[in-house]
Structures are given as C-alpha cells and as structure tokens.
Image 1 (spheres, rainbow, N blue to C red):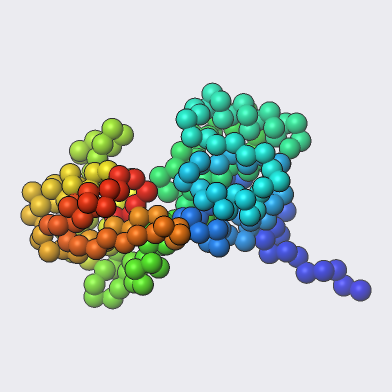
Image 2: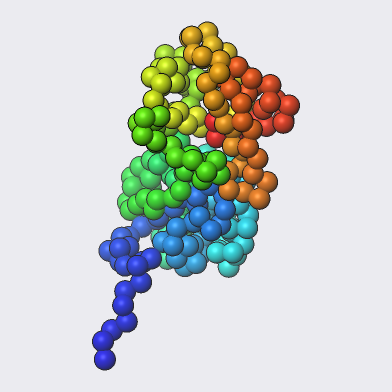
Length: 240
C-alpha cells in the first residue's frame, strides 16, 4: 500500500527549524495562506500584531494557543519571550499583518533570535495592496496604463523628506503607487504632489481595512481626496 500523499501545506517546511514569521494577510481570515494556517494550528504560542490581525483569524485557527499581543513590546521583551518558549520545546509562531516583508519589523527580530542561536524563516502573506486591488476590481498593472507598481510610504518620523519618492513615482505616469502607513498624512502627501506639479485630477483611491467586514472605499483625485478622508475620520489602517 502506498504512503499517503504529502501535505503541500507542510511538505516544504519539513526541513525548516526554528520560529516562522508568518504573514496573516490583510484581514480576511480566508486570505491566510494554507501554510500559515497549518503553522497556526500547530502552535503553542502565537505572538501577533494586535489589532492589525483580525481577531476572527486568531479565534478560528489558534484559539487553543497562548496568544501574546506584540503591540507596545520592544525587542527586550519579545525576544526572551519567544526564545524561552522555543527552548522549552513549545511551538512558536510570530504572526505579522499582511506580508512580513512589507513594512514590518521582522528582520530585526529575526536577527536578534538568530544571535541567540534560534533559526527563523519567512512564510509569505497577502499584502494589503493586493487586497485593495481586489476590492477595487482592478489590476495594479494594466497595459498602456500602468507598467510598474511602487510600494512606498510618506515622509515622517522615520522617513526623511529626501527619502520620500511619492511624487517621483506618480509623475512617471505609468506607475501604480501604493502608499502604506500614510492614512494620517493624506492631506500633506496630496499637497506635496500638487506643489510638485502633479495633475490635481489624477485619480486616487483610499481603501480602509481592505478585506475586513468594515472595509470602506473612498474614491477621488489628488485635488479632493484629503477632504473626503478627513470627513470619513480615517487616520490609520488604509491603503492609498
């Protein structure tokens, strides 16, 4: 009698050791990857990104596990927590929102764990730009419209004005520019675009909580989107 076929969710991970850094996806529990679900279902400890991860996902796939909200905790707290649990033989999953490779702090945690002798690895997730494009029923790339996609963020406390390239991307004309971590700064961003000569009629969509039950879409232009976002009261958790 032949052996049962391998489980594609875990087959690739058969030779991986250590703590996986798993992308939870944009919000909808159905957009968690099959591999991510398999790892959560086996976990004893899940360190997650707080309200950025849908509580329904946690309830559905890892209610049995100890759950720790990482928000407000620095490396001095998180690393010993994960290290000690792993060394005690517990199965640990670090759960990031979206994809852990996009605007996360995964590498600094992974480097810190590796320095403690604990292996780590990435498990991809669906980033919010992809959920937003699905919500908008459109493509991020489209022949003769947009040949490129830029994932970016606006200047602020952790990004200098010289490192803010949003205007450059938008002025190229054929780049779909996806702005992360910029809901609070929509007006400032649009004002800079206008000052840099961007056509005020350039279309903009702001997708709040893409794929969540309370998802909302605000459509407008560079010239008027800030008023609409402020009227809606959104200051975070939207993809521009």
